[in-house]
Image: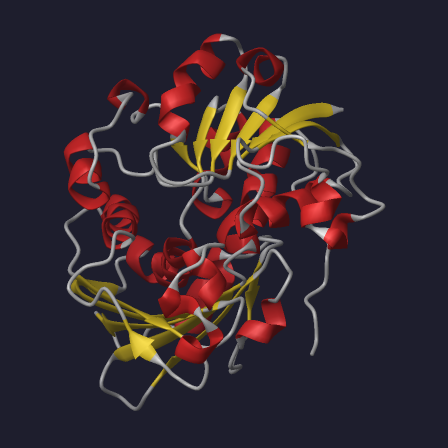
Length: 342
């Protein structure tokens, strides 16, 4: 059994991680930490876990976490980097579900997250935890930077085109929409039902902190600088991300269906839907990215539709997928859930 600790188990991502790990056949949850809720039974805060998890939240204890095989950080940005060096030194492997280790340049991190990085020396070692990109590196990693939700949907959608040099890298557009759970479990006026319901809006149009993460991914596989326009939107639903992506083909006669089919052949968590129109409810609760790709007319513009559940493939499910790889378990262990409908 893999003995795991979870730091920050009271948010939506932490709750989703608990839901998946509680039924994982190869995991024993040793500790779930929360300073504000220490001593409270987890199932009192999350009744859906009654009968599946008999643990209480505890204060973060370095010794207790140091006895784990793996520690997940489901914490706000800037938290994991304070504790990760000591955990790694004690032989514990770490998966951070926040952004502390996603960006390789500490100056870029400071610009977008408004704080200096506490352990920049670890940024180069950290493996970006998108298995469809870095599967072999993940297997041997001590430290995983779990991708953001928007970057997961956008990167997987664009990857075959960019990797093959099939589109103009200077003209990439990502028009993405997210449910409100992507903003976290917090009391914020702008996330109230009366504010979000029956409404639809773009936000962070001048620049979203996931943009440099997406650009870093695409640049790595394009081998050149990329020009990305990324605009996120908030939609009145709880879960899900839909990313509609646009690129200009270098060769309009390219077999784009074949390109995507070949790139994702054998990928259990990427479902290519030729001629389909993937919707967010088709992945709700599942660790899946569903993709459809098409062209409009003969103008060489390719349109990619990519959908994920932001809390599963966009966060907790992907983290468990990474854990499975790190500990030589079947990659789909604990992640076999079928999407919920309706």
